[in-house]
Length: 462
Image 1 (cartoon, helix red, strand yellow):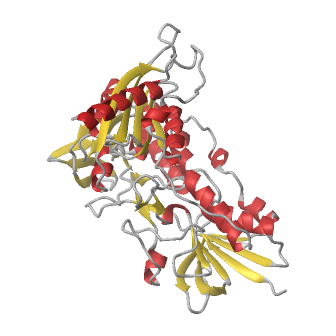
Image 2 (image 1 turned 180 degrees about the horizontal axis):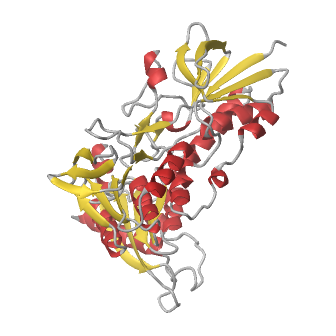
Image 3 (image 1 turned 30 degrees about the horizontal axis):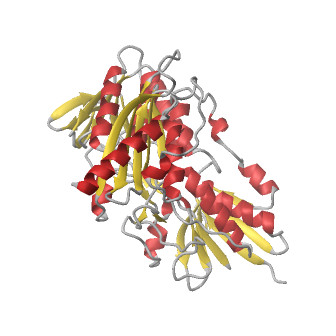
């Protein structure tokens, strides 16, 4: 049997999971695996970078799940600091650029995996590329930010974070822990646009209580520099905010430059479109996974772009199995995500109100306040749960949770219920674990479900 060649573009979660899974299922005599990565690292946790910058994780290498040497020892031809600059679909080859030597060369493939990830949104504003302005997407980005923080002189040190999504609030905490005065500039109505504004308001209040200044409705128009060329301030809404360092937390978008250039199918959010096997639609021997693809939202019935390592690793496992002649599928997501800023935990799954309206769903909502433990047990802290359910049917559509210890991971109850297509009425009978140190007799999620059942019944008789 002739040896086939698998080429993988991208050396992080999806790409190396695919390469590793394919190698486990097929030996070198059957499958030659070549992986290209333009950076210095492979298989690392980008989600852990804010906690490394903030000092919770002490060593950069703690974020690396598998080193390049480990991948090579398992029979993968991994080429670091090598960027793929062109895909020739008809010729079944890719053009590689060695970033160290400047050499370019072509490598043929029988099967191709595109795992090019996502790129941080970096608006074309005056001064946006000045020293001291940092995106946070790779380990190299994290190291550059730490180096920049070390250059700031002792005394009053000021950081401006642009954006108040997951990365924005996590980096605000990291800057606070590093001893900086922190201002978050958010162009939205409230922080955490992944939540409804009423829940985002709770995040805003908590951030204020932590000493983080959050300015909503602040559209950044420029970054100003000092005489040394480094960032000095950020201009937004006609005001100037002094800054020794600026962190961009505006979000990410799929990195599909190569795919777009050769006409591979892209979705409404700019991500590659695949079938359930993660094969690029219309291309038998090309797969894609990770932050460069769009996935099916099982609740809304539409594709969406979600940049999370959990999905990327699953994509890679599915791709690797299919490339090696096995079988696997990735059915979709319900949109579960958790985050924190200091001791405040933030979680969501399913649809927000605006999402439900966008797909034409009628719905009811209910919001409850509870605690993560029995009210009489020491350390009980407040928790707010908001639930959306479909009008009349009572099908669960989404849950958002903001609270302290024990709040965020409760969203997993709702994620399972969403995946199973449960109604809020059925949820009230869930047999959840109970003991005073962990939950009230009625878990907050079940309290919210009961309140939502009442809202559904009232709406049905209105």
